[in-house]
Image (cartoon, rainbow over all chains, first blue to last red; front, side):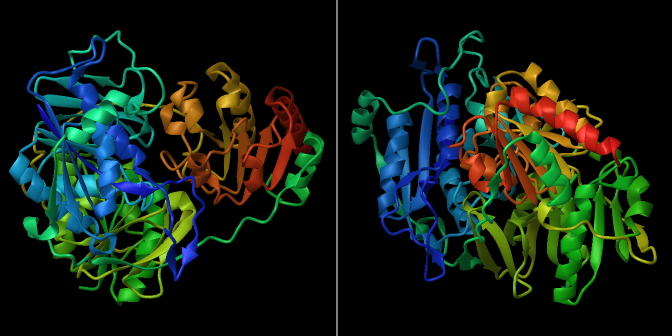
Length: 273
Length: 323
């Protein structure tokens, strides 16, 4: 099975947002792989390995793709170090992109690469738009399973557990399909591929960290570079950011001495009970 | 092309409360464009909700077909796109619910439309939208230059629309070719609850990692039921399996903005704050005074929940008894 994982670099969300000239100031920002995309790489690895014996399924391949400036190669390389096999870096400035441009490029890459499944994070934690996976599935005419909290593979189809309003919905999609992953996809038993024993529990929290061996190996893994024009995409976004503002800070709160005081204040001051 | 097509979810012959927020935005957008709101109901049983929907707009279009019994993005998105064209929609909108977030980008792809997700308000022009980014730490105004624009509206940012004075017209439209692209609905493991929906509740009681186990949430549920509140939880609590995943409040999970939010034994990670800091009044109960939750709380009580919550229940009961 061949899995394509589009990834995006994002400014480290633990940094405090600053504004410069009406936009987020990214001068000197540190960058990370978008957490949900990191989970998508982890999901791809779990689908294509025996977790217990730590061996990859023969003939399987994970191709990672990013669309972004020259510097974004660094975060792309991180996903190779996690265990992806090959990378494609479509070099473009961030301001040349919007979700429709990204979908156009990814559609072109998918036409050439013909993956069985595309797995990506449900949203990037900078823009929080939550669009690309669904738009891509729509543009390709493929089925989609978004916000995956669990995936069970049987043959060439996936039964995906989706956290929806009021419960968990199970949806079955055949390949080729687009799957977007949510936080809980990295839980110990969330990915069942029929190869890793059901009893095997992935440990820790989140995606695997690149091992030293993985980091060394990643330096030799192929990373192709391309341009927007290679996929017929124009650097002409139809969604433009006009400006960014910071919300007013919440007024300072108060620590109250005890519960009776709290209840009195909620009733008389805030008037909410 | 000046109308606004509002895709509205329904249940048991009525619009969902979440849909009323969508209609509030839809009315603003229609006014800005000089057009009308058209409500679109899709699914088996849609006809039964049409009379209720007609109280909110001059026109309701119903696409009802037994093959649409279970929502699938693959079958619903083409219907939304077709109806957008048939009703000359400049804007296609839904509430940013699990369904709205799933279907709308697929509609945008079908229409070649730019999309603004999870918006907080209409901007200073009809094609400008203000939306939270960076987990709600900043607000971005985006301008979209496609002839049709797709939007999802954040429920907690729009007051539910009120009924209009007179009922609108109801018409039906065919579903066209229904092709699920091989996708199948398997089942829904529903979390049944008599409490209000997390998204609609006026009061929310949330617990975090410090609750230690699911059994301990019972005391929070008692507090919630006393206040007619919905239950919520931090990611740490849902990940640990203490409570159902759909209780999660945060950047992943529900975004809520009730009048009153209780954060009990919750540290206040960015992820969680993104989901609740729009609440009108925030109460934090935590034994550690240095937790970040106290920085957003209007009222903080530095105490163990084991002591504080039972006392809170008894004090509120006392207060109610005096009224």
